[in-house]
Figure 1 (cartoon, helix red, strand yellow):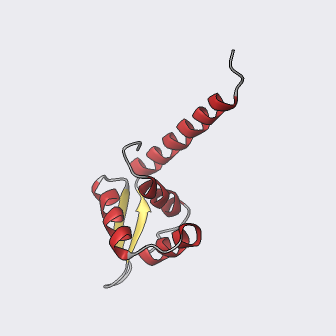
Figure 2: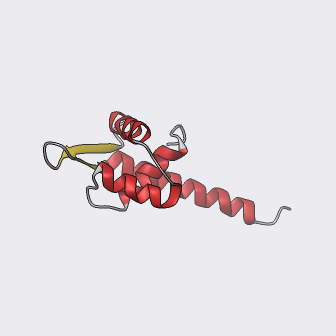
Length: 96
């Protein structure tokens, strides 16, 4: 999980927050926070997450795919969140 880019971690987070979102759903959600995202950035990164078996891809219709976290992806996202929480807790505790 730590070897993923920040954008790829953002994709996992957005996918986790939806029930089988399409690429356009993911794009719209991310654009609300990050600004314009072009297809040349979005879909290769989604494909990478599929290849890494963090995300599963399926067909809604002939032109539209959906994405959902795999069990591996869900576990990786939880582990990453736990690591971040623990790391930030260490930063906020007083030094001896």
